Length: 293
Image (cartoon, rainbow, N blue to C red; front, side, top):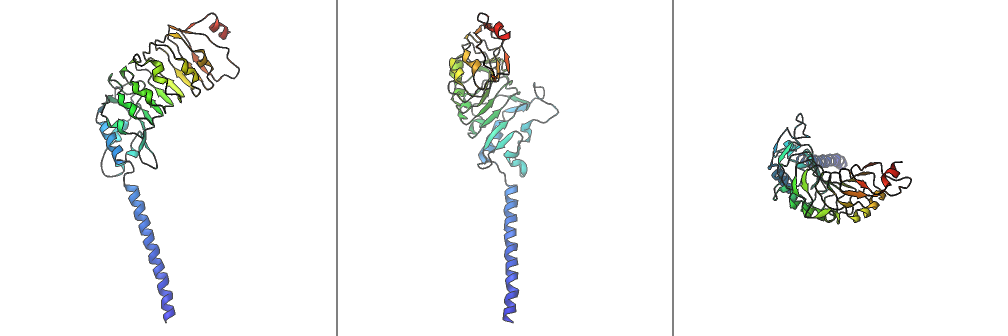
């Protein structure tokens, strides 16, 4: 009888062990699916950032039929406590830190305070606040704390005043768009001062920013640049001819700068340029007419 008893016990023990393992796995799976995935500090910073705004459906670019993205930013038990699942928020899958914030066309009205939680999101790579209304406030200099930024878009959002020097410290930027903020100016820093450290730029869009300075020659060394929009910027002096010949440049708009002078180079066959807007620019001799013919 002893052997038969052992045969009976062994499969029973094995069954119990397998059952226990399955229960543990289910428990871990349930726990991981219900616990908030985002970093606790980042969630607090986002909620603090949200507190500075109201929703205004009359803002240009706002879709009144769709809820503002920040309306999903709420703190209560359940899935919505995970800030990584909030509208416009993207987190790193390994660290759970917020790395992207896209609040474009979110019907946001207000101003960004210098002590905003936004500037504590130090892992942020992308920030898009386009098509909101920041009520002619200045861009806070604390944006320079976000040193990991690769994409910064503050276009068409009613910012005013001087572009802060600190943006020039964001040396990882690939795309910078401050366009169509008609009361924004770049007098203190100059265009050269703004871009001298931003050598990885693929897109530089400053349309309608009051720059009132020369276009620096160093832009002709930005070999990765694909799109350059400097229209309606009160540019002066001679436009660097080398910019026309940048190896990746596909789109160029320097129109509406009546004090800007330029000479078109001999374009080589296979030039990447697909679109140029040059109206009101003063061309030397017959270069523009020779190019058109």
